[in-house]
Image 1 (cartoon, one colour):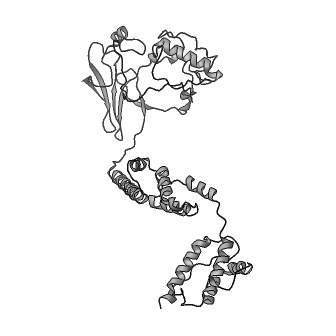
Image 2: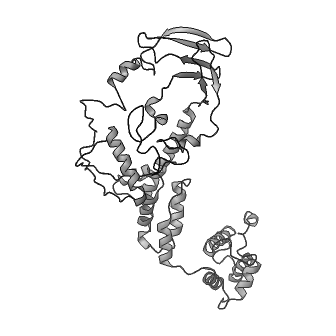
Image 3: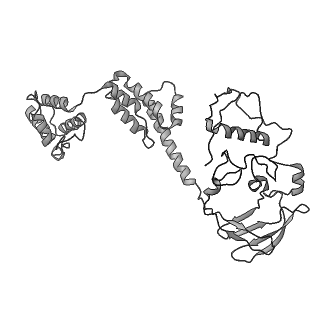
Length: 393
């Protein structure tokens, strides 16, 4: 018959140690087994059901059972003795704490999370408040914040409604993510190279070697150029020096940003097509310039083209620029107004006390920015945020 082919549950305690399953869970499996083999009620004698129970306990389980007292002679008395021995005492405070600390993990579905909450709630003695407690825990600790916002908009939210709506939104999010992943384009790799050229018009562009240590320049002092200290070093020789180029205090001419000129080069890989725009600093009278075109399949050719006004190269002569602009430049007769939500109230955060070691460098930097025109002094502001000081890396 079909009942003869049904396997009993796994042995509860076959060897010394801790049981693989809690006794109440294993007992539910054993009762289902008795139901399948038609051993419930008066179908089987009570002694036979008791013997079947002891047989499924395993060797160590039977040894433990026979060492107990008050096991009785019936099936129910044996179950009661085993339950008393293998079921630990429940601490309601600890179990409720574990229930409140249980949050949904990133890779856990809503159904899995609710199942875990139900298992924890069964030990918390919530009584008729169990459904409400599980609902509140689900809304508060669900991983997706958008689902939480949507759930909070629902009136008369029950546990069943919460689980259904959260599962639907979770499924829709996964499907939308799959559609977005399928429609993403391919990203092509980009390589970076630098090129150098002499002033000779017949010169050929050659790739230059990249610096071996890129971290040196990033950790050098922007005042004097030394790589042995940073700009906040008190004994930096350029801290009070005047630049010979821009006449500003705080750096040497060799690291002055206003003395650097940049040229535009376009590199297209993998055919290595190089467009080099030369003599841009001396194009004060004309808007034309010689361009050397070099590819891997053809020799270098020089072409005279008109500079497009939409290019990244300035078409203003250098001498004219110096007559009208200096330093970082400022827009005159214009006040920028930040667009803010009128319903939002301004926030004035409390200023933090700076560490004593950084007070002098911060004060010097603020004075430098004030003198350079980057910042200006004001008396009051509806919005106040503290200064965050970070060292250069």
